[in-house]
Length: 277
Ligand SMILES: [Mn+2]
Image (cartoon, rainbow, N blue to C red; front, side, top):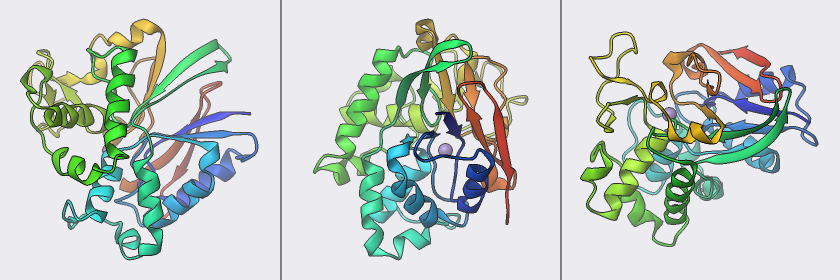
C-alpha cells in the first residue's frame, strides 16, 4: 500500500487518469491525497468530482479556494466570473449532491505513516499553515470552519467568508472576521508579512516581492516544532519547489499548461503527467 499526494486538479480529469495509470493506482490498496482546488480553470470539473466521489473511500481531500467559490456560486451567494470553467456542474441539478459532499470535506488532514525514513506525520492543507499556529491551533480553527460549513446555517456563513480583510488576528473583532481570516490562511495564503499579517494583494513573483514580504514557509513555523511534514498546493508558480525538506509544494500548474504531479509519501518518488489539451 502506498500514499500518493497529488497537486491541484483544477478540472484536469484526463490528466488524473494518466497519472493514476503511471502510478499503477490500486484502489484496494493505495490512498490518494488531494490538496484541494479540485475544480475550475481546467475543462473537466464535473468529471473530476464524479470520479473522486466514486473513489472517496480511497481519498484524503482538503478544500481549496476554488472549491469554496464553486460552493458559493452554486448557492447563488457569489457570481460566476468570466474565468470560471465549472458551468458543467452548475447546469446539472442532479449533481447537487456533489456540492453537499464538497461542503463536508475538511480544511486540513493529518496522518502518520511509515516511510523509508521512519514514521512521519504529514499535515496537508490547501495553501499552507500560518507561522503562528500550533498543530492544536490548526485543528481547532479548521474544525470550527468545517462545523459552520456543514451546519443548517451554512448559507449565512458563506455570505461572510469572502474578502481580503481583516489581515491580522489582532484586527478581528467578530467571529465572522476570524473565520474569514482563517479561511484565507488555509486556502489563499502565499505571502506573509513579518508583523504577522497576511498579504493577499501582492500577486507577483517571490524574487520581485517588496522588502520584508516572504512566502509563509520562509518563516519559523510553530507547527514544525512538532516534527510534522507539511503538504500544500495553491501556488503553481513555485512549480513544486520550496527549498525545504519538510515542506512540500504539490501544485505544478496542470491547469496552466504544465504538469499534474503525484508524490509517493513513503519514498518521495515523484510522478508527473503533462497537460493534455
Ligand atoms: Mn488555490
